[in-house]
Image (cartoon, rainbow, N blue to C red; front, top):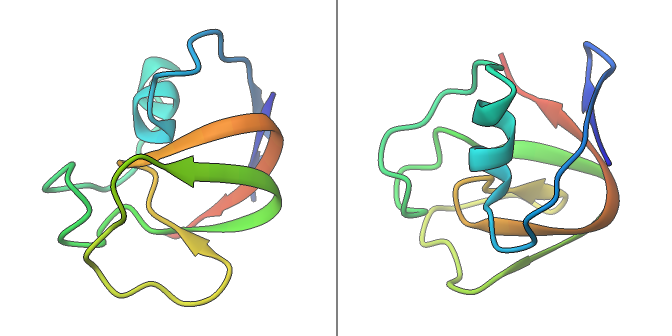
Length: 84
């Protein structure tokens, strides 16, 4: 389960191979992105709870506690904050 803040929306996911961005888009939630490859950082979000992993590390600069949804995969329940 994925909880999106500040809206509080709850998303279910079934394919562990989908990226977080793909899951969010499947629920028709707007999230800004450009490259889908971890270069631009437009899709950055804050990971509030839970664990994600990367098959390929993002090249964009991210601060501690931030994730890049276009590249990360969800492991278990997470809570994220989308930047406006």
